[in-house]
Length: 353
Image (cartoon, rainbow, N blue to C red; front, side, top):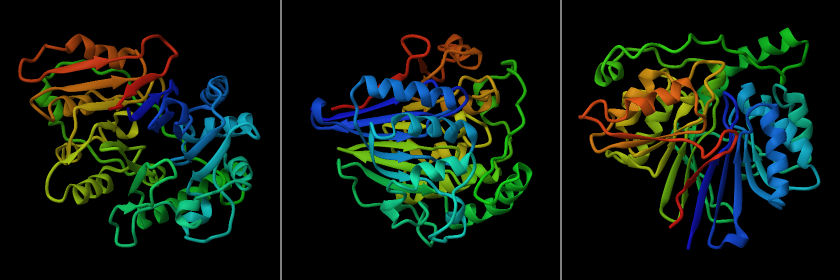
């Protein structure tokens, strides 16, 4: 049997995904994508050490927003000397300018110090993990365990757009460039479900333009015929363009889509959903800080196909449980809501064959 599992750990408003894959239970390879907030990183370190995991093939820090990077600092400090790391993909300050030497970003000085003695962007020769020079998705050589990763975001332009924000954040924090992070303002609370699903899905919204989100490393992970799209907080324009390129004129088949930006309507667009063929959609957030997932984004997912979808949530919270109550409310669309077995447990998605 071929093993391919994803665990979406409770990471507050952020992401923390552990991919496990291989041909036998006793010899699995592991990929860690982000580590949520500090409490998540500490809990994750304890969990993996208790499982006797002593090697992680790849760690990806998608971008420098706190709900993705903060926990990684605590995690790496806690497992130093106890869990070996094959490679870390992380675009630091110098990668924004395509320089090979320099300091890393935000909460950042610490992360640079932690990764400086490890393999850092080894897969790209130390340069930025990004799309090809012409903007096309960039397929990297297979990892040692056989996973194939294709970079869909960021591109050169998205990285360069981050430079002014990065410098501004550094000045505010009294740090040299390479440290700093821009916080978003909290979103409004839960909207009322007054409109029907197609009307909500058709709501006109502005696309995400936040520079930090634009630097997100979004990846297509492929193993033994299974495809998982890890959307990070990527901008919808670039993500859609990359997906369409890979789809070669048709809808790109996926076994799982980790929805970008925790189900924000500014990132989950109808154009993006029209470019993929997917039934299972993972949304990672507790909804407490930014009010995700947006009802408009979820409505777009539910109405993206007429033969049913599954909404996989790593938290039971007001903005996710409300969808469980709507299941079956519209005969034109069928969907199922999946939650963790218990609070504070990761949501397990098993793609094994």
